[in-house]
Length: 262
Ligand SMILES: [Zn+2]
Image 1 (cartoon, rainbow, N blue to C red):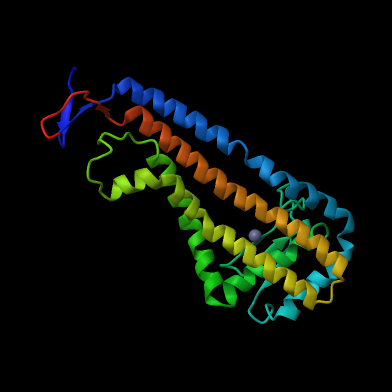
Image 2 (cartoon, rainbow, N blue to C red):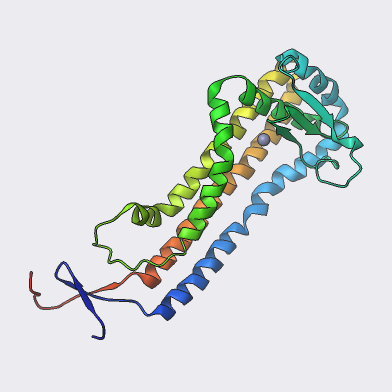
C-alpha cells in the first residue's frame, strides 16, 4: 500500500486528488440536475395566475377594501398599482406581486391579479401584527444565504476517516443537505401563514365562497413552489455532499487477519 496511514489501529488509504475533481464535477452535475426541476414546481401556480387575469374584476373591489377591513391601512400599509409602471417587469405584467416590509407597500397589478393581493396583505399582517410571523420573515434572507453556503460546503473534500472525532465543521459537512432544507423552512412557513391570513381576510371582506375556493387553490400552488424549492435545495445539497464523501473520504483497508489492536 502506498502512503497508507493508521488511525485507531485501522489502516486507511488517502484518496487520489483526481478522484476529488471527478467527485466535484459529478456533485455539481447532480445538484444542478435536481435544481433544474424547480420550474416544474412553479408551473401550476404560474398557469393559474395567468388564467386569473380574465376574472380579476371579481376580486378587485374586495381586495381594495381589504386594507381597511384588516386595519392595515391604519398601520401605514399602501397598495402600489403596478399597472402604471412603465416597464415590462413580471410585476407590471401581473405575473408576480410582493410586499416590502421597509416601505409597508404591496406592489401589485390590481387590474390583473387582485386575487394575489390578499396573500400579500397576509405578509403585511405577518410583518406588522404578531411576533412569530415577524421573526419568520426576518429569518428568510439569512436562510437563503446560509443555504447557499451549505451548497458550497457540500463540495468540500472529506479528508478525515469516518471514525475520526468530529468537530462542528464535520457536523455541518455530514448534515449539509438537511441543514439546507431547514434554512428554507422559515420561508415556507411564512408563506403558508400569509396565505392562511389572506384567505381569512378575503372572507372578512365578504368575498363569495366559490371565489374563496378558487383562491385557496391558487395559494396551495404557490406554497408548492416554495416547498418544492426547499425540498430540491435539500436534496441537491445532500446529493452533492454524498458524492463528495464517496470520492474523497479515506478508505478503510479491511485487513483479513488481525491487526495490532484487534
Ligand atoms: Zn408570498
